[in-house]
Length: 245
Image (cartoon, rainbow, N blue to C red; front, top):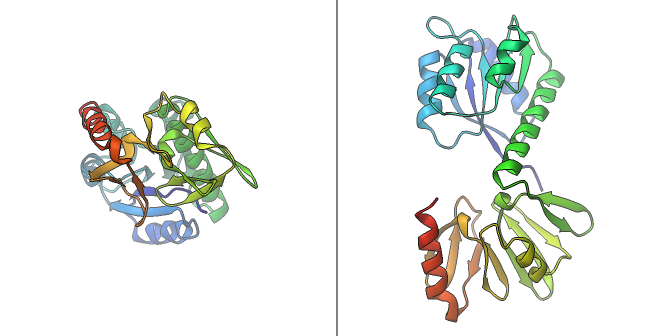
């Protein structure tokens, strides 16, 4: 069971450096190159318009026009907050990047190991952001090992023949914690017992068809059910919740 994917925007105007960076990133299966930019203006446009980005890797120099740092500053002023690794041949003063919120600075020439360290810091930063966004709450998953997910990671929790499965968008984890315990623990996190066997994260629902619940960005086959006597109640609750999301 792998890590949740990180969709990265790369801003690099040197083709050789881009090839090296992409080669190193290819060894990290959870890193997906979602977009590329060769100039500051292109970087700003991509990061502003795209909604699928999780992070950025920026060269400090992007040819003529705005630098990577200047473009990053403009994005912050526009409210675009993406965790960022800065790649540079000459590192700026630490106080500058600290104030901007850069996760790590990787100086050229760098090794795969050094980039890997920056990716680990990026992952930790994203995990912490997710934790805070979810209200500072971890959901324990206890089976052969103990795992922790944030409520925002979870689509639904399912009980099948006394086996509890915690479903994320891409994986399923077996847990020994009863569904009723999860229901009590997650009562303030928009989880709803839609059926005696399904505890659903209402914020993750994409649509409801009859008694079947479908989820955003979920792997095929990941669906939950609504008890017949709860269909109207659940649909009403979810429609009201959408107005506030």
